Image (tube, rainbow, N blue to C red; front, side):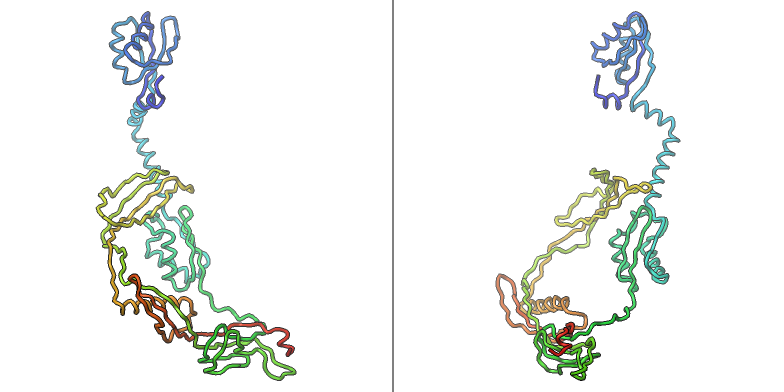
Length: 399
């Protein structure tokens, strides 16, 4: 018997032979290379067997030389199944249309849920989503991915601090954290304010407690700035010290700037490719043009295909190929120094609090080696140097 897949796709028929020459008929088929299998005797002069569809024309020659009657009593395989489908094409088209519609409906946006937001904030979010095209009846393939939606809403809706976006089937879920009003101050424990680093005092603002320093005083790290104990020594008043003590502090920074730099930039030219992924198999459906770019970068966006509440092992992928080219940037010594100072200032600002400000910088050392300018910088900063320190029992008792 031949391979089952060949038999299935090629098609085969069941033959009933009757008469005196049935055995000779089968033997002649074998001699001519016609595959015959499952030969069964169902009567004294009647047998049944199976033959490949492509060998049926050859049976006519053998039939004429033998005294037997031949009838086809069964038809099997893909060719006959295709004929049946063509006869019932209306049913086939209806089934395919139903399946395609079901897939499309399973990949549309049918609901948008927003949790944790006030009505006015929810209205603003819905307005922004509508501008992005995120609305009921929209295909998910046409929308931005979840990360892009989250980033866009966080940047454009001022009344929220964070929003979580999740796509569950055909529903977008938005979990919102709004900007809250300042909480009521909790009852504070008795404490002092001490210096968190060496500085020269520039300004003091004491709300509560005893100020222990004045402007232009030089203080060391850990030195007492505002005391939470004041008044009569025998019966002192103990409070949680509050205040802001601004001081001039100093930072050192090192930075290297190459005089010549090579980097990649986009030229503005691009083309797109579209794929249907079935498991690990990737099938290109659009974008067959040849990639002529010498240097390029590919950005991919993948969308899963859903069927009702299940995620199918099928996805739609859009790949954008952008052309890149090599760009050169050369600095003079003066430009390199200026760029290095700007970079060092930017890095320092990331470490400081929002109220701190840089009032000056100085280049301590400059050197050029291996095509790089190395700078050692000194910065002057005005910042709040006060930090909390709980008042111990020994301080309260005056030990």
